[in-house]
Image 1 (cartoon, one colour):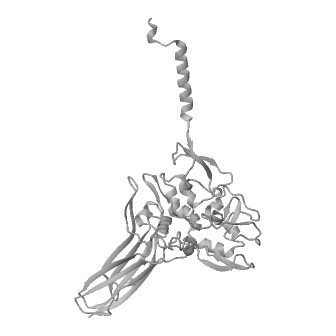
Image 2: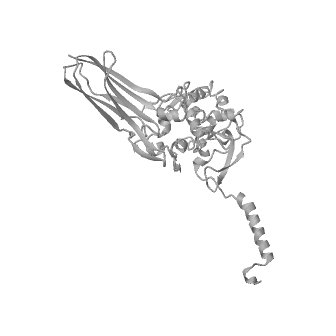
Image 3: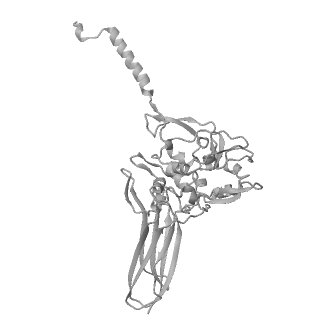
Length: 399
């Protein structure tokens, strides 16, 4: 037999053994890529600072009564329990990192994420969090989300009177903290994009360097921080915004950024006259675009002419908001949001052919998402999708 075509038996054995070990171990071989981006990470585990019984908002509220009652009205308090967010979270396309803005503290999260297998956001390296607190989780963006770092309470001024230590840190408790969540812009996957650009909108707007997030959403007041203590400068903690509730029992405070102007309407018109009417929406007060944040939000302006029996003679609908295409690749198709200070006018014209009494009715409504999206997410009829922000009725006659 000619051996130049055959390997020695010992070599074949070595190769076979190598193949065996490769098949045995390569299958479990994993490269763990560390978390790098801020929105991939939770705030590290926090011990309960001295003088507190827990990190829960309800326990903070035992002393800070006003702050707690204000926070309960806020959207922050609904960040985890919000039905829309929970519906999104259940989708297969939803990666682990979405929770880091809605429950920022590691104490609130069932698992610790230490890295990503081969950098894949759908393959987080997880371990059970022995300090997980489900009750704290349900509070969403709670007091400790902003006011506890390095196992210490952080405040805007510090205090020698509090029964717990307070470290002054104005930089942390500034717009920098707000923007860490409210300016999340990233294409996470081809069909999943975060498009929260409120921080960038503010930086590019007329109020940058003059006013910040706290100026409007946490206005200043002067009050006692705890009953019986001296009054001092404080801020409200209800975080008013668009005002769209997150549940049937949620009653958030509203911060209206828009102003509305209507053109004059004569009280009497002649038959076959032309009626020309203009409604103008002005982003008069927001330092960012309107709507801002969630790209599914939009504003509808409806104009109707109705006869004295309420029958609609003519109608017109106008929309302000973004349009996105989510499949096969997430992409913004259009965007006509209002810039700070920008006005948007809608012209409404019609011929008045019939004599009688009429009304022009104008209604501006703010929407969280479309009924179609709500149905897709199985949110149910009880989930609030919108509310009426402004309305006006103008009567006139045709003779």
